[in-house]
Length: 331
Image (cartoon, rainbow, N blue to C red):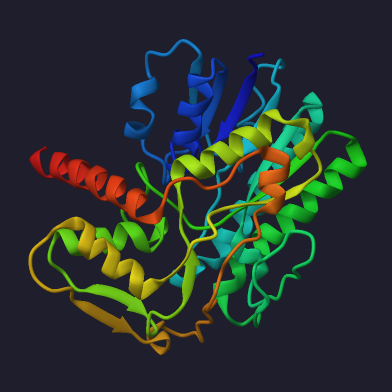
């Protein structure tokens, strides 16, 4: 059975990949993006698709969602702002709160389901692994470190979404993403370490690694993350739940750099520039040393588990990044 879905942040990394998955399944998609980080080229392939309609608007504006069709089955709220380490903590906090509030008000008016994109960062400094939606506490660091602004903003969004569900009776599903990467990712730190490391390797530049590179992450290929979003959207079993979406393949940041170098097939030895945490201007930067999800709930409720091995995912991503950078250089 097909439906009509609103996707905020539709021209971003996960948003554009989700649009493709929804259209592939025969659904109608109403996409919203202010293009501050999203790109029109990410959704260019859908331009002539009659089941896709794009609106350039800022979801923090209460009127951005006002003109959409009333026959909407659900809204997927992906639009967000992050990376407060670079002095954007106030944007992170305000944009994420205001955008989520407006998305929730839209779902309340229509009585439709809302799927909220959250983050593994919410688990903070919790030392107990793997992180479980049911049993793991949020252990947030010192408020004087802007590094935690993103985690706090998303934690507030989660509470707000569940409060709306309780107060107004429409279903919400909260998804905590773990290290998504792949085609259409931003080619900067906004997209996490993979695109930055790939760029350095392809252009024979030293790879910047924060700390000593022993910190671990669970990198999840885009198609696996998107399948989790899609199943959470269409399955009523996901209603009212908080669900981890990610790979359980734990990888150190240093190993990620070495894998990218090896898979790229570029000549020469790997070059690494270790960046001390103390170098982050005007703040005591606090990193998370290990991050691995418990995905049993995802497998149980959504029937989804990460299927793309990190080497295969990186290989595909390197080739995609090669193509887009070559195209940009030729224009």
